[in-house]
Image: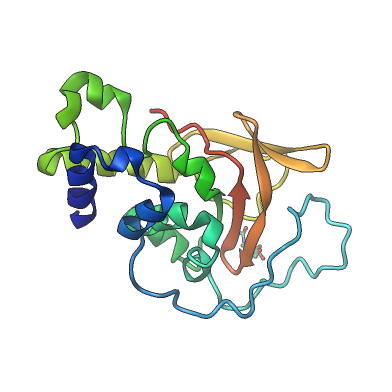
Amino acid sequence: MKTYTLATSLLTSGLLVATSQAQLVPFFSKPSAPARPASNQQPMAGIQLPPSSSGDTPNAPPNGDVILSDVIGNEKSINIFAGFTRDITSVSNRLDTTALNTTVLAPVNSAVSSLPRKPWEDPEDYNRLGAAAYEGQEGSNRASQNLKRFAQAHVIPTSPWKEGEKVKNMGGTELWWENQNGKAVIKPGEIEVERVVNKVANGEVWMLKGVLNYAS
Ligand SMILES: *[C@@H]1O[C@H](CO)[C@@H](O)[C@H](O)[C@H]1NC(C)=O
């Protein structure tokens, strides 16, 4: 909640509109360090397109006991989105649950910071309420709801997620992905997957080149 008080005051003063991603990160990132070192995390060269012809041992849980909540904050180029996942309770709980697998579709920082509006802003709110849309407690709640919608649109409650498999994201929208010329592309929306960042016991983190549609 403090987070939005700060965000709201910055919005009000107009500063946030011009803020850079470097300034954006601090108020969405918890100060706590990642729970474990990333020493056993191997960055993957490219997305694994099934069927895998490699000599991997696909049935062995990768990286032992390490789970998504341990690693989501480790990759600098997706740390804006990682901050959102920690601030939204439904998502942070999901990533912290060993028994439930998840594919996190994390837009790269530049995709989030170049959005025409911030992920917690909704043109509808401005239409209805004007410039004060995110002021006060109700404004904070509104921003929080919007950010939740954005974060949940990027969380697939399935892993491994197979090509062509239609799954509803946490926001209830059905998505799938296809291999196009060796690149994994999320549909609908045609958002390309840059690479798989992490594979851990309860799922995977994929880095996206853009953001998924999160409109209500
Ligand atoms: C969860 O992920 C692990 C690691 O990839 C996999 O071995 C396991 O089969 C998955 N479980 C389900 C229910 O998909």
